[in-house]
Amino acid sequence: MNAQDIIQLEKQYVLQTYVRPDFVLERGEGVWLYDTEGRKYLDACSGIAVNALGYNHPAIVEAISQAADGLIHVSNLYHTAPQALLARDLCQASFADRVFFANSGAEANEGALKFARKWARVNGHSDKTHIVAFTGSFHGRTMGALAVTATEKYRRPFEPLIGDVSFAEFNNLESARQTITRRTCAVIVEPVQGEGGVTPATPEFLAGLRAICDEAGALLIFDEVQCGLGRTGTLWAHQGYGVTPDIMTLAKPLAGGLPMGAILLTQHVADAITPGDHASTFGAGPLVCTVARAVFNQINRPEFLADLRARGDYLAQKLHALAEQSPLITGVRGKGFMWGLVSTLPALEVVAEARKHGLIILIAGEKVVRLLPPLVMSRDEIDILIDRLTRTLDALSG
Ligand SMILES: *Cc1c(COP(=O)(O)O)cnc(C)c1O
View 1 (cartoon, rainbow, N blue to C red):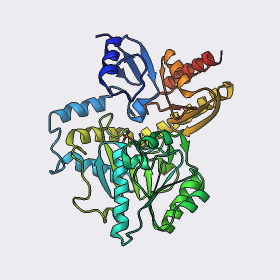
View 2 (cartoon, protein in one colour; view 1 turned 120 degrees about the vertical axis):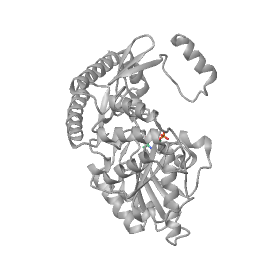
View 3 (cartoon, rainbow, N blue to C red; view 1 turned 90 degrees about the horizontal axis):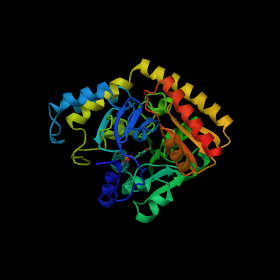
View 4 (cartoon, rainbow, N blue to C red; view 1 turned 45 degrees about the vertical axis):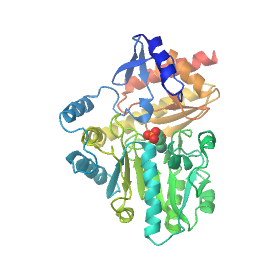
């Protein structure tokens, strides 16, 4: 079957919720992707922040083949070692005391919102059901996660969503102060907004939110589904801010491309949750947990994180220089290996042109070009990325 046949089949049989370019990806190695026609692309998308270790990483390949020999799934009715070990690893490397495992980012956020509602109820506040989210937020596509996602075009066709949610302005403490009340059980925020345009929270904003939540008796939830696990140069994005949440949600890079989400919580919140409150059939099976541990062991090493920060600084410097000389780029935002380039052209046009130059990037809203390179991208590969981006912008402005 050639590429056109495959594309035709998809167009006929797959529900058309995605708009895809006309090539078919077949294999990958490191930071490189190859299509069925043998074309080679530098990947600065990582399957939307999922493939943190790039493609065909030996640690992941080995973990999968080892785990495939054992149990793949037994359900959460039974104990298994990989789940226990992964939960320990995540807690020992974070503020959290407990973990609940899910299968995606949206699912992790759904669970976090449920836990917050239960926590308020158990602590004697029957009317403390209000949830606060922010403009520019993205927390997922299921009904609860969508209710805290700001984008009108994602929400409108599916209303009514779950109720008692308000939006405050991101990076505006005065707006947050006016929106969060004694009735608020949770405030959910991305320390670095991804989908909404790659906008880092300011340090004052996150610190201020922590104080307002403490005063109102509300839980602070950090959605680190995209920005967590090394992406911003620290293991958790909030470590770069010195602000600690009560709950953190994770997903994208967690299991090296296998589906996994996680909700990390403090004991205070965990105390409100009892058997039967929440569950997942697939969550944290032995195979996915073995792979997640392999990924975690690669990223959670001081040498790896220090080198990642240095390479992130290198990338930042190159991107700022690029923006300086290109009239099409009017702003550069981000941290570590998570960047947004504010473009005068529709971001989709830049992404399409980049493909012609052998570069895979993505968008974050209409006018922001998003870069999420695998965390293993070397300096030499960053040079290639910058070169291809430069040629892309030159072609568009020429
Ligand atoms: C992608 C994303 C989600 C949703 O994750 P899914 O696995 O697609 O459900 C939630 N929050 C953030 C910040 C994300 O980037």
